[in-house]
Amino acid sequence: MAKISINLSTGNLEKAPESDVIVGIDLGTTNSLVAYMREGEAVAVADDSGKNTLVPSVVHFADSEQIIVGTEAKKYLLTDPQNTIYSVKRLMGKSYKDVAAAEQYLGYEVIDEDTDSLVKIRVRDRFYSPVELSAKILAELKKRIEATLGQSVSKAVITVPAYFNDAQRQATRDAGKIAGLDVLRIVNEPTAASLAYGIGLSQDESKTIAVYDLGGGTFDISILQIQGGIFEVLSTNGDTFLGGDDFDRAIIDFWLKENNIDPQILTENKALSQELRIAAEQAKKTLSTDNQYTERVGEWTCEITKAQFESLISSLINKTLDSCKQALNDAKLAVENIDTVIMVGGSTRVPLVKQTVSEFFKETVNDMLNPDEVVALGAAIQADILAGNNKDLLLIDITPLSLGIETMGGLMDTIIPRNTKVPAKAGRQYTTSIDGQKNLQVAVYQGERDLVSDNRKLGEFILRGIPPMPAGIPKIDIQFILDADGILTVRARELRSELEQSIQVKSAYGISEEEMARMLLDSIQNAESDMKIRALLEARNEANNIILSADKFLTQNTAILSEEEISETKKLTDMLRQSVEGQDKDAINVAMDNLNKYTTPLAHRAMDVNIGEAIKGKKL
Ligand code: AMP
Image (cartoon, rainbow, N blue to C red; front, side):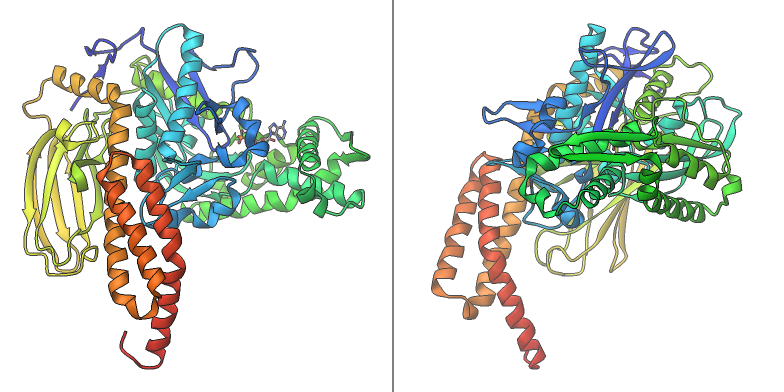
């Protein structure tokens, strides 16, 4: 195990790299920002004007293949929504099945042929993963801090919501890697907010805190227990579609009513709708300090008082309290057990929000820091601790390289990511790819590259004797258990038959620190090309599955398909087969999309017929 850091520009290992800044990044749904420690104090980095620290998490693809990120990109949300991607954080590490319900809120095309695989976003004829898009935002933040500091920056701490699962955390790490950042730690947003207020910084502190985070579009409440510098998330709750945007909408509805305007006008007149939205947000912000707001929009006078605004939003705020109650319940705590309440997110500037939350928790809330910046500031403080600059906090033992197994096409599937605290335990479920498959080879690797052939093999074994089942049916659970001495136990278990097999390997055996540094440097330098290879191999795997299903579908449903439908399906399947032979993942994705769009209605028809037959008592 290691308590070391690696200088990526030289490949050398260093104890405490004083000169090498580690930045803290809040990669948000609506806005992102980067912060660092300047003379012992966390500061957020502003743009050229020196005023705006927030970078809107928006990526716009201009016609000329040019990619624009941030404030400039946001301008295209209305004029060119299909090519302007926002809220990509909502899609991180998610499959199409997970996001189908949210798709109606997005102005761009989210697709996947296979509901279980990770989503892609289609922009014209190119397909992007949420990881790639997040990497563009991170790259923009990297550029910003490098311009401010006048030196290159390669290490970061990135925050994620406390409820992010392993896949979402790994996706965030991958985005960092593609942006050329070595992600030293993924930190929970509420933990970062707490650190920003100096809570949890000393070893002898013991506290239970609530972090109330109300942003533009999302609400999160997290209950954390802090003991000896360790943060434990006791519970989280929230609403992924509740925030300041709803306050704005309530004001617009109020104005429409006051002026007797037909709401239909908003769908017909986009420019007016946009003007009203901007005025509503302005009104809301004004009412955080003043008692009254008046403005002319077109031919109307848009007026609202603080009292009117408060009556509009009180039910929305009460909804957040329901989540708070649920979170307390889940943590088996009462309001009285909460020692400190921390406010995060721009919408906590609304006085009624502060007042209501404060009354609920019977506690004065912490709101001294800028609620938009507090998470990034805390991330910078965490980064400083990792750099060894905060002598009071111990660095915990971590695993220096990622551990994982080989999956389809020779890809590395990381199970324990590098920099995970040890001891650690993690696992994932796999299945077979061939009908009647009896054996499954489990090859264990160490390293950061996407292809296992570029990583270091630690060992392998074969799980033999899986009972014959169709491909995709067996559930094989693979567990990685890493103890404090770096001994890794890998266990594979087929859940139906309880068949089990395991090995033990020494993860740090026979590898020098220089070699580790080299591997890390290689992974950052090759991140872009690795990502491309991974995307191609994944597209091929997915396409091969779809070809198999299409062939099966044709043989099973000949009777209910017309000749033309059969020949068209065959043609589209052949085109997909051809594209799989090539090197262009976008061509594969287009071919998959075409086949899928053509066969979906046919599949629905087949299902209806089959169900009909079953009802009539016939065999399926
Ligand atoms: P965030 O997602 O944390 O960046 O929060 C952005 C939300 O905070 C948006 O809905 C903003 O309109 C809102 N916001 C920003 N400043 C204020 C303010 N002074 N008063 C009320 N809401 C604000």
